[in-house]
Image (cartoon, rainbow, N blue to C red; front, side):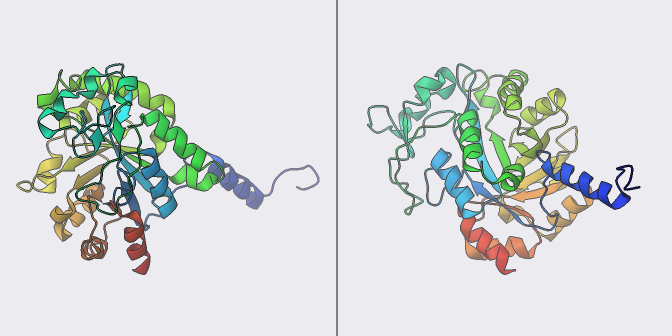
Length: 309
């Protein structure tokens, strides 16, 4: 066999394994590994949804980056929790305060990305995160975030191939045609910007709005979609029954997760992803329940506790 340069069966298997591991997205995490999602990056210590926050989450060891997105008037995906400039975390371009009563008038859907990025993020002390660093930044586009993350991970191919994105599309029915397009158009515009980024194989897309999930599933059935919930009046089964398809995951507030929810998701082969777990006792409890996806404002804390198990 060696004389005519044919591979042995064992050699073929080795070569095949090398090829598979070299394919982007081919490196997968162990199924029993806890995956910590840095909530809005590392919101506990850095201004939320900024490049500095995402890079800090990576440095802390987060295996996934959770972020929120909205659309601008020129159809850019802007990383922002709100479709307006929230008074708690933003300043006007001239560095003056935004008062709560006027914040929704600074409607991102009516701004170009260039206009939106003149507003200042992170320069104000955060009332609920006293240890958060004050760093003047702008709201980045999703494109800018992915470019910055790719640059950060340039010398660590395995990490680059396995780092997950968890993107929440912000949407509410009352915002239609005011702060966002109608769902079918919203999904189309999102996909037009998202798909060229070539991260769909390592991205989950979540929303509280079932209309957006339905449209995304209709337009691109291969997407890993997750249904968010804060509805304490309905069971996991009742919430998931609101969709016409089985999603990749179900993501309730961590306080809604119990052994019954864990068992149901396991039986349905639906990933359970809980948010936002910050306190040590709560992190330990969700770990005790066997939950594998944990979203936290303090990814380093969550990772440390996961390693102690």
